[in-house]
Each structure stands twice: as C-alpha cells, then as structure tokens.
Image (cartoon, rainbow, N blue to C red; front, side, top):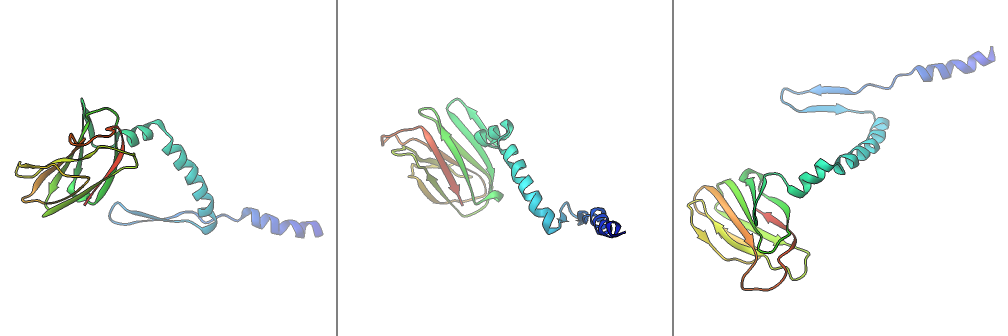
Length: 179
C-alpha cells in the first residue's frame, strides 16, 4: 500500500504533457510562436547547432564567397543593389591584378551619396575611380571616401579599382559601405 502511494505522484508527473507550441497567425505572412521558458533554452542550443551546420554547408559558403547579385566578367566584378536597401555594407575581394568592381545602385532617388572603402590590408591600392550618374555623366577619380551630390533619379554606378597614380598591392579583401 505504501509503495502504491509512492508511485502515484510518479505516474502523474510522467503523464503530465508539456504545453504545445501555440501558433498565432496574422492576416499577413508573419507568424508568432510562443514556447515555454524551459523549452526555449533547449531549442536555442539545438538552433545554434543547426545554424552551425547551415553556416558550414558548401552551398552557404559559396553564397558567402560569391555573394548575391554578383557577376564576374573577365577582370570586372559587377554587383547590383536596390537603393531601397540603403544603407548597406558588403565585402569583396580582388584576387587578380587590375580587377575592377562596379556597384550598380538601381532606383536611386536621393540628392547625395556617401560611400567608404575599408580594408585591413597593408599598402592596399584601391579607390573610387569613377561615379556614373543617372543622367549618364561620369566623374572622378576620388579617394577611399566619396561624398557626391547627385541629380536626377535612376541608376548610379560606383566604380572601384586601383589608382594608377599610387603603388601598392592590388589584391586583397575590402568592404564598401554606402549611405
């Protein structure tokens, strides 16, 4: 009899169900899920492991190295971004001598553009060579920082490459920040 009294709480605890995930859908494509606090701690560790697997997948590594909206033609790298994504920063790498990056910003409607090239490479010979305005005019050269008053709406190109007036390495990693 005493043994059965001891087993009753164990049976009740083992039969207790965890609260299920409550999902509330809105009229748009957003979904909200609520998890119990104990379950969220376990799931976050599982998610980190899952993220690690995803981040180390070959397809993910290819996207990270080649980027999205990126084309390479001979020694020219062409990246395209919509102005609605501003401000943004992206990374790039020159692996050959005399490479050039053309950043095409579509649907640009602002009155000015600011951009900065950053690198950790020592003695890296890189700058904004030219800017192509929506009306088709070109201007340049510039340095690693660019602030330019634009006129009209349309597509703006930022052309980045080596400076023929300076020396230094033309291969390496860099980032471009645009506002």
